Amino acid sequence: MVSLSLLVSLAIVPFVVGQATDTNNTQFQIEAIQAHFSGAGIVPSLLTTFDPEALLTISYDGVSALTPGQALTKTQVAPTPVLAVTPANSTVSLTGSFTLVMADAGPVGTDETQGQTRHWLVNGVTLTGSAPLNVSTTDGVAITSYAGPAPAQGSGAHRYVILLYSQPSSFAAPQGLDTANTPVSVFNLSDYVKTSGLGPLVAANYITVEEGTATFTPSSTAPVATSTLPVPATSTGGSSAASTGSKTGSAAPTSTGNAQQSGAIPKISKTFSVEVLFMAGLATIGFLFN
Ligand SMILES: *[C@@H]1O[C@H](CO)[C@@H](O)[C@H](O)[C@H]1NC(C)=O
Ligand SMILES: *[C@@H]1O[C@H](CO)[C@@H](O)[C@H](O)[C@H]1NC(C)=O
Ligand SMILES: *[C@@H]1O[C@H](CO)[C@@H](O)[C@H](O)[C@H]1NC(C)=O
Ligand SMILES: *[C@@H]1O[C@H](CO)[C@@H](O)[C@H](O)[C@H]1NC(C)=O
Image 1 (cartoon, protein in one colour):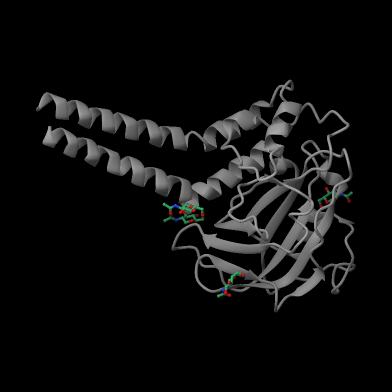
Image 2: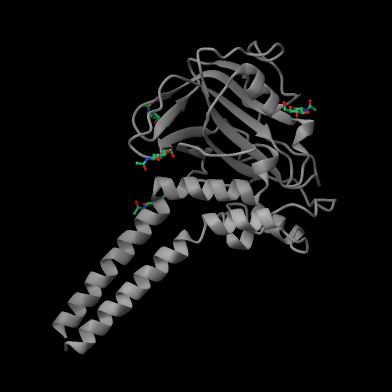
């Protein structure tokens, strides 16, 4: 019996450790954001591709450790969030200047070629401290100071995407977005990035905010199948990912959407199955030798 308990405990150790490192692992969390970006249609409609080299975490006063796409209320997102960046691994070095953008990508299915409302734009952002690095705007130029999301009543669950771009020395702010205190307005994110010479996109994440109940039928081509993604936690009782899912539930997700999701997520269940098999195997050996 002693050897059985020992073997079972030995079998449980990698399971517990494996789970903890899996869910808190930086690379895993980056992959989860990538899967959410594809699932929520941010890729490819807002960003053609998304291959970040760091994890961007968003914390609002009283709401920290947000999951990608987490549904928050207008009140929760009113204060300026605190952002932190963790490099994917030790070979990623994040030095120099960065540009921080928060753009309203609207509800799933929005035609992004029409532009996005700019809620935050800071040039000359620096990363301070050690991992997780603080995203510091104090030495930067706040072209548009943070303006908390306030989507129109019934306009659906808006996706507010926060992006951190590398800002090379050749960066040139385009006319109209080159002075501090430029009010919130619609701009063209991809055009801004292209003409100013920003890039690459180092890290990004997003939240959702919805006022009331959507009064429209979202695009039938929205490739959202939230059942295949890690479920975002919700602090408001109504997960926007879940409501997005039910709204698009009758729509057939595109094959691209499915392919992207199935490629990115099964990691958890694969690791889980391996650990369970490992445990079962060791337990069986324990029984055989008792
Ligand atoms: C994983 O992250 C969560 C949230 O940041 C934290 O509360 C928890 O202690 C972490 N777990 C481990 C094993 O590091
Ligand atoms: C480290 O992360 C970067 C960015 O994601 C990736 O390109 C590179 O292959 C990673 N290196 C290792 C050793 O995992
Ligand atoms: C990073 O930000 C946190 C929260 O705002 C703050 O407590 C901490 O002092 C900052 N660290 C550095 C190195 O700036
Ligand atoms: C926004 O920029 C993209 C890429 O530069 C372009 O394809 C699109 O037509 C622009 N949209 C508007 C409304 O100007």
